Every structure is written in structure tokens, then in C-alpha cells.
Image (cartoon, rainbow, N blue to C red; front, side, top):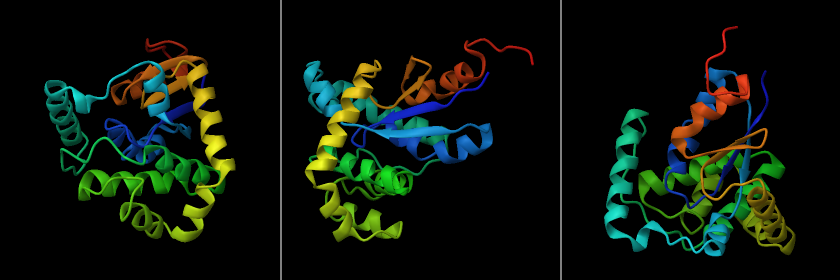
Length: 204
């Protein structure tokens, strides 16, 4: 048994850095396809009255150290604390959604996270926005104009609602046949479920 895995993520989520920066190589190594689905996690958090880490100093300190430890596990360069929360979270994801439609969304997501977590420049804002687009061969002026259109704004709202209806409440999440796996550390579980419909190893 093997089905596709939806990777539901929001640029603006801190732990999502760990997934974004390794998912391409992970997918090749595991021989599995992921469907990258950017959404606006802030809209869902506000609806659920979920207070961000930035307003919880003890938990925030733990979060940054935890991400730093896990980045070391994956050999990912990182400089924390990174700027957080993002002022332009929604727009960063509008750009990503446009990119998914045009075929460069994954590359943009990786680069904008790289600049955010390694260079300390917030995603969705300048100079991160133009620099990440230039690195992947896109024209920032064209993309910024297109990502600002009512059509893309509405498309992100629609995708966010669809992802919420699937049971997703945070980022990153992996969805397999209606099963939701929340968090970077649940990636292996999602892949296991996609193969066996269970978390148990099933002999081939």
C-alpha cells in the first residue's frame, strides 16, 4: 500500500524549517512523493484563540533550543532565535501558493526559509522576498504583483479552509488518507502510514 502524502505547511511556522530544508532529499531517499500545500496558519490560530510562542517566554526559549538541537540532528545550519513572528506571514504564503501553481513553489519555500533561519531576514518581507525569488530565477516584481491579486488572496483563503476541514490546526502537518500527523517529528509516521495503513512495520 502506498498513497501520496500531503505536506501542509505555513511559512511563518518555526518548526517547519526542519521539514522544508530536508524534505526534498528525504522524498528521494524514501521514494515517496509529497504534495506541498502552503496555507495561512495564523488564520486558523486566531480562530482557535491559540496564542503564539512569542508571548510565552519560557516556552519560546525552549522552542528555539529544541529547534536548534533538531537542526543539529539533521546537519542543518541555523541561527536562532530567528525573527518571529512574521509580519507578512500571509503574503509569504500567497507567494508560495502562486509558486505551486507555476512550478517553483518548493524552491521558493526552501530559499525563503534558508534566508530567514540562516541569515536572519524575515520571510515575506524585503530583502528576503526579492532575494529568495532571484535565487530561484524568478522576477520579484512580477511575482509580487501577481501574488497581491485578489485571485491569489482568495486562493490562499480557500486552501486554508480546505486544509482546516481536513483536520489540520498547525504547521507542519502531514495528511495521509484522512489521517493527520502534526509536527516535523511525525514525518516518519506519516510515511509509514502511507505504506502500511498502520504505524506497525508490515513484512513485505
